Image 1 (cartoon, rainbow, N blue to C red):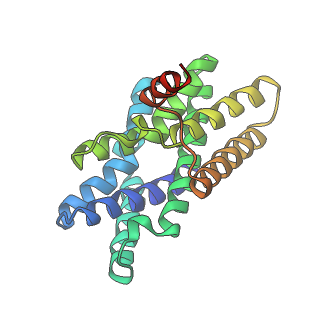
Image 2: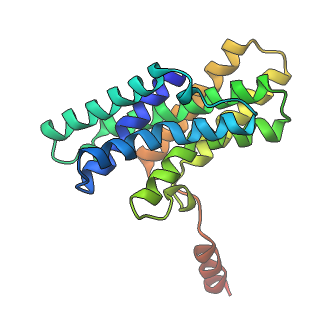
Length: 205
């Protein structure tokens, strides 16, 4: 799951850098940040050395994602908006939610800790990449994105408490994250904003 997430998120992050017309180094930095920042934060939270600093394979997988993004930019006008990129992002979100849930559960964290670490693993890299791109992190807006990770990680923890096997819990988590994210993309789901809620109350009055 970690390998899948690395390739998928590096592809997504690099595509954003290409859209912003960054040079090759900048594209690589954004791609690798998207792929590794969340997992590195996860590892620090559970008191272990980040995997990216232990294995060259990790960096290699990230570079594969960056290479795919560059290849797509040659073939497509807007690779960051292509359905393939959006689906890759959904798969990466699911993969990192599962990976974070597994690591947090193995570290003996509480239910809240499992969900928190899994969500950080899943969306932390993208949030930091947005800062590099000069944007407010998109997870703070109304898009139904981080919520998918919350649902998936909660399902993983609940399944573990109920005695499900690790494989079954991981499959449930991944399936829930991917399905809710794809539905959210298809139907333009979003969470309400505080401003919208206040405006709605004013209209009711």
